Image (cartoon, rainbow, N blue to C red; front, side, top):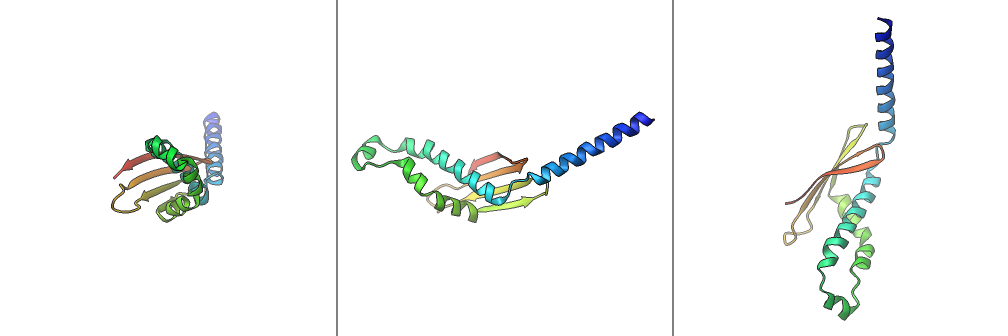
Length: 126
């Protein structure tokens, strides 16, 4: 019986320690906004810039990647305005609904933040 009690106390101590560690390393909203801005910028560079005709690039010395990098503050503001956070102390869930205007399709992203990391588990075009 004594072994069972020791195991139960040890298990409880491990769970408490894990909870404290998770609560202490739950990323902030500002960190999420930085993460989302970086991920969206990378996506735009990969998808948007690759679809720009080479003729246009050559004619006006257009550098799509630099344009996206220079728009980073505006991208961050759009993400900030379109994100909702649900904080569960041990982790947070961020829902971002990007809808610029009616001509461009909207996108919805859901991300879990825990242990100083982000995991986007839902990304869909609406």
